[in-house]
Each structure stands twice: as C-alpha cells, then as structure tokens.
Image 1: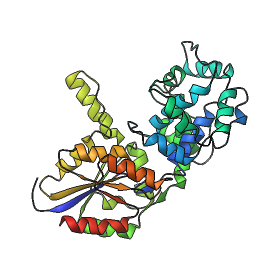
Image 2: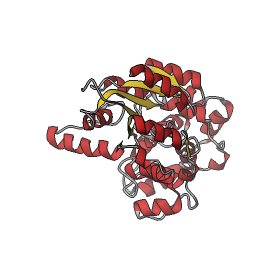
Image 3: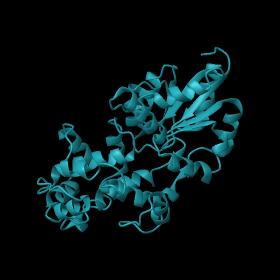
Image 4: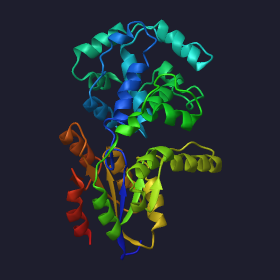
Length: 335
C-alpha cells in the first residue's frame, strides 16, 4: 500500500448511513408475527412481539449476513415455544406452511412472550444453535421459489409496488406502502460532501444492490461514493469461488472480502483505511482485512449503546462514535 495518499473511508449502510429502525428492524418483528398467521389464536400474539432492543441483542451475536437471516434465527428461537410443528410433510412450500401452521399450538409461545420482558434473550440462553425444520424448509431458496419467510419480509419492507416490480409477483401478505419509505439519513449530506472532498469514500453493505441504491438515489448522495459493494457482489464472488474450488464459501461479513476488494481498487491512492459499522461483524471484517482497516463502531441508533459499545470493542473497534462530528478528530490523528 502506498504511504502517501488519501484516507479511504468505507461505510456500512444500515445503522450508519441510514436509520433502519423503522424499516428493516421493524420488518423483522412484523415478519416474525405474520409468520404465525395461519395458526389458531395468532391474533393473541403481542403486537409488537418484542422490542427493538431484543432484535439488537440477537443481531449482535454475529454470523448473520442480513436481516433475512436475522429473521430466520429469531423464528428458530420462537419455535422453541411452539407445539405440534414437528411432523413436516414434503411437497409444495405453501401447502406445507398452511397445513402445519393450522395444526400448530402457539399458546405456549403467546404465554411466554407475555410473561417475559426479554423473551428473545431468554431463548438465546437455551438455544444451542439448532435450526427448526419448518423454518429451515420455509426459508430455503428465494422469493417465488419456496422462501415464504423472505417473501413476507420483502413484502413488508418493499411495499406492494416495489415488491411486484422486484419479483414480478403479486404480494400476498402486505398490499400497502413499504417500510423502506420510513428510512432516514443519519448524516447531513453536506457533511458527506465535505468528507468526499478530502477522502475516498465507499460503501460495503449486506443489502442487495437494488435496496442499497434506493436510499442513495432517494437522498441524492450517490455522487459521494466512488465504490458501492453489496450482497450481490458477495454472492457473485461466491459462485465464482465455488466453480473454481468446488466448495461453498461465505464472503459476506465478517469475511473481509468487500473491504479488501474496495481497497484494492484504490491501491495506489490510499494511505489509511477506515470502516465505520454498527455491528461486531463489521469490526471483525475490518480486523481481518489484509489492508489493516481501523474499525470505527457507530452507535447512533442502538437501543442499548453501552451494550453495543462493549461488543464493538470486543470485536476490535479502535474507536466508538455516536455521530459523524466525532469522525474528524479520528481522521486528523491519522494524517
């Protein structure tokens, strides 16, 4: 790496550039509740099922590349308190889904959620990493190909029109505006513009490409980022690696693939690399990168800032900030 040049600042998107507490995070708990819609008595489930702080606690356990996987894990946890969903027939996913849920007893789950202040954290303590067979079957493949959990999530997040445009399918669970339209920018565009005049700027996000570019265009901030890597880039690289080596490999965070790829594209222009993220996996990706990124933990939208700060530091964060105003002193120290 060149010893002279500009700082490379790479940002995660969710929870750093964009506030997703009312979009992705809300879609997680709404999906978890709607999943049980065909079960007798499902309307008695608490609404919402659990707090945003509970979602954060599960996400901070790591190993979750996106909020679909977060939803799958939460459903695995919830199914620990469900009875009668053990006999899973083979066949069409929709038939399996409706048939099994119709014969499922969720009364123990309702009671558990109503009687515990932190139900997900309680379930995490007894969860040994096993997956639920029904959830596993209904979260395989993609929307339109049997992944019912992801379809519920995407309908809620994208809304009727954008879901239909993205998947060429009519929505079945949610037929109004999407939660994506509730997202807000976490940084003043003027501050981004100023950063971009003095530094090289990029994004490394677990979002799909279309969902990453949506807020960039909506908030008119795409010109500030010279490189944007998304879930699509990871999946494409994984397919190439599998074809070459004959084995599956995950290149999503905490793997440093995106960070390494971005740094390599600026190899002759950078002096120091920074990655700003809001999850331990972000800090692990920075720490494992061969380009020696400094991981900066961002806690602006965390329900429990102290807990997240500890987790970020344990994962290797060199600094913890709560807003972008705190970034300037860190950058000046590196020059």
